[in-house]
Image (cartoon, rainbow, N blue to C red; front, side, top):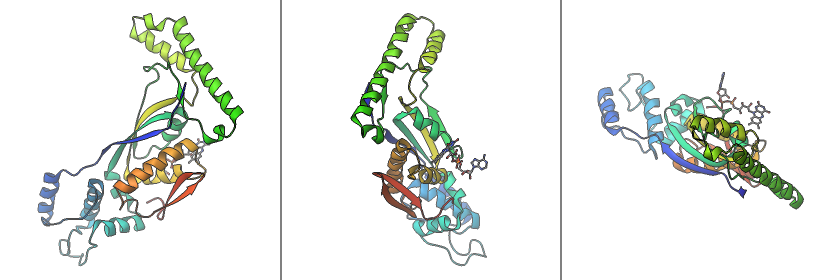
Length: 260
Ligand SMILES: Cc1cc2nc3c(=O)[nH]c(=O)nc-3n(C[C@H](O)[C@H](O)[C@H](O)COP(=O)(O)OP(=O)(O)OC[C@H]3O[C@@H](n4cnc5c(N)ncnc54)[C@H](O)[C@@H]3O)c2cc1C
């Protein structure tokens, strides 16, 4: 067996279709409108927000005589007044690797604005087990011994079952799949696996708040601490109201404006 650390890969994000946006700006009468958004996601959120009131520039809507200039100011106001629905247009895509089924089970409880693709342990056979060792387990040498021994035994169980049912000689994939699924039942919930996870920026703000909080589980705090670091740098105006504190060696990222 092998010890692993959860890994966070940002694999995709929203980008602007320049031609289409320019055509829309001409249509609405603001062909020269520009913004200083640091990312496509923040620029798109601003466009979606401004189109509601035609607030690209004064006069497009006779009721609008002044507009907030700049992406940071504009999105800052959106966060303050809680019009977070415009943040739903931008989506970020992650792969979380070497995370446990403890982690994935907690992750999938967040349903609003998310998408999930989970490595199938019906198809992917467990031969070598890997796992994350929580810090509390690491505090005791004796505890670590029990932890390692149990994982080694469970790894051996996987090999033994594969041998008994001669899965490598099996010609029919359907039976292979059924056996693989049966074997996983005796794998530990801490087994490391992979999950693809996407979320819109409104959902992401919520999940970061919930899952970096000190009362959340260690592994999910570790992962969402890394997620926060990534998105704070990439979308600074969407996360401008967050404050960072370190609790038990892990980041706790709290928004100034809750539930936008
Ligand atoms: C520290 C901690 C401990 C936990 N312990 C447990 C536990 O012991 N047992 C357990 O079962 N779960 C537990 N959970 C999971 C928790 O109950 C939620 O299921 C999980 O955090 C998902 O969050 P959410 O409900 O905000 O859903 P999300 O899908 O993230 O939704 C975001 C928001 O959208 C709105 N929303 C989403 N879906 C609906 C809907 N169907 N109807 C109306 N509004 C909706 C809500 O305002 C919601 O807060 C725990 C979570 C944490 C952070």
